[in-house]
Image (tube, rainbow, N blue to C red):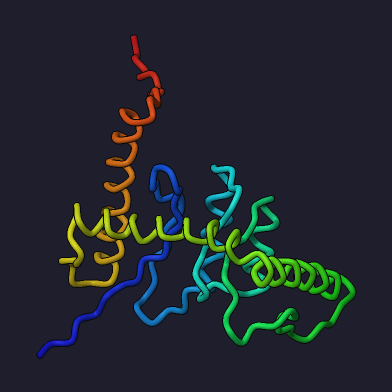
Length: 190
């Protein structure tokens, strides 16, 4: 029996069109949480976010703050052992203490919102299932395995599948949502 190596795709997508707005590829053992900030920041450069939903694996004061810094509301459910105070690291400077205080206040607000308004919180959080739909769409159209042997080729193949998915979503959105595409004018030399 041969052992297969695989890559892990981390992505963020829109809830209406399922367009992938940012993607990162890692090895199969990579923790999900460290990729969150990069995905949110990349998405925030080109898209306006109102809410960001993620599963419990992404819960951290830093990730909550990353979303809030982009004027969006983070909907990341709290774990059963979570309390109203986040785990904090060593604080060295006044600036670091101020940042920690800001993150702590956000953590408390979201924790209490989660505890006392669960129905409302979960309604927003369940938009997160769109990412599962996006993965399902990619696998259904382009296969659920990679044929490439080397790590670089696997990464490129996974990225190509995401690119092809976005092209399909764009075409679908043109027809379903009445989006008028604007293409660049071709340059001609006379």
